Structures are given as structure tokens and as C-alpha cells.
Length: 228
Image (tube, rainbow, N blue to C red; front, side, top):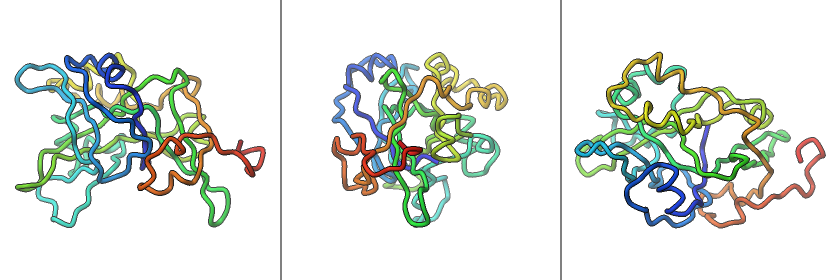
């Protein structure tokens, strides 16, 4: 799964990476958690150009009860046919900008070691996402991150990873006319392990209230050699 991520790139970097007309005003976020507002790239219905919107992380399908906190992740292998996601998969796909994400590795019966994962290049990238309009009057638009099988790097830490799209796939993923499930599903594969890096970080990231640079600082003191 993907339950936390970060977005520390500048507005200029995001505008360049996602071909946005306007440079967004973005403060660095080191520990983005479910139910929080996040930056999402969608196509403007009028102009067809990409624009950055703010949606709540946790997709709430139409007709869901008010107590539904939403789905933060959707399995890419089945989202295209699941009732909660299939309409969004066919019509409402988006890019979710990030510079890294966190996964937790079990190191004992009660301890889980957090790890940060990112592209080796350090550049921002996009998770494959789905979005929904407000489920009811007064509610926010919501979104979810698609997940897939882990690559060889992520597999050492967790049994799932978020879908990271290649930049050349952005056009097809956002295209509202591209509704062929097979063609779209072909984009949802594990990102190449050799293009990624990972390092252990402080358990400070465990708290969603901590949104500071310490969340990304390498912390391997006291870890067994195999976990460093």
C-alpha cells in the first residue's frame, strides 16, 4: 500500500515536470497523510490543458455513507472492474505529484522500521491516481493512489508499492478518450528498481502531525546490518 508520501519539489519543478501553464505555489510537505488535501494534476474540461487541483486523499464513491473515510489506495489489478473504482478508472484518471513515499518494514513482533523511497534522480514523479466528484453536497472532491506488485527494491520492505508512471505515459493516462482497460492496465506496472533508491528514516514519520525535514533524514543507527 501507500499510506504516506512527500512532495518537496518547488512549484517551478512541478510545472516543468507536468507541463503546467501556471507555476503553482506549493510549500514543501514531508509527511502527507490520508484525509489531507493533496495536489492532483487533471485535465481541464474546457481547455484540455493540465491543471493542478487540491483534492482530499481518500476516494469516496458516489452514494457512500457519510461515515466513509474513503479509499486511500486501489489495487491496479482489479480497480478497473471494482464497483468503487471502475467508473473513475474509465473516466476520471489523474496524476498525483510526489518526490517520494514511505513504507514500513517489519523488524520484529512489535517494531516496524520506516523507509523512504524515491527516484535515484531525485526528480518529482507521478503516482497513477483516480478521482471522484463530491459524494454529497458540501463534500470535497476525493482521490486514491493505485498500487501494484513491488519491484525488487520495494519487495525487501513491503509487499505492495504505488504505481509510478513513466512521463511518456502521462498523456495516455489522462486522456478521457482512452477507456480501453487493457491498454491502460499495461501502464500500471512496477517501476524499475534500478531507477529508485531507499533509505531508513526516523520513526518521527509515524505521526502525521510531524511534517518536518526530519521525516526524510537517514536514520540507521542501531539497525541490524541487513536493514541498513
